[in-house]
Length: 270
Image (cartoon, rainbow, N blue to C red; front, side):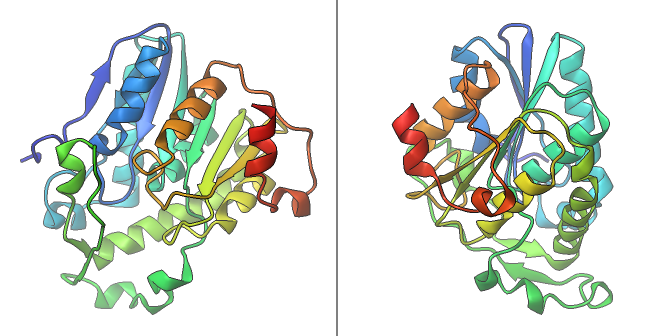
């Protein structure tokens, strides 16, 4: 049974479809405010529920990385049936799915929100037991309550199956292998205060995707939950501006320059 408020949502707009992909142990509710903002800008929005999410931890433990990706593929297929072009916005694991989808499908634009390549050291990912020792084992999941958000946002899972974390890491590894196939315009947003997805992930993504039309913006007052946190209005505005083709890319910089936070530089040009 799907948890109340964790259902997929579809918001009818124009011919530009936007696929919103939520993060690991999250639900479409995490992206509802962003979706409503994009609909107001004239876009059609679909946020599918990724397999094993918004139900129970036990359900999640039975899903594979391929099941997660199939959920994204299904959402993309549905949007292509009613929209002339489809862009993808992914938060956290949803960003991983967005890049994988773009590597195999015709995607118009990509927005990456706190997509992990590296897990922040404080998460202790290096202590994850081998898969054979993880069956039936769960670890507590801590997430601070959020204010002024859909109710379902704060009804997240209280534990995480260790086997599912292995599936997530496998998905991330596959993404790094496929980044060279991603040649669509991409905006990468990441917070310097992200204690889940290490901020150096943003620079890695920018270095390894094939497109020259890319930019990285670092936020300073948010944590990992960019679509819900203190700077969400800025996230919404940047996402809409980019998807609508009104965003001006900065001149291409080398790898070392890409790694430097540039929030203040971007703000001066807005």
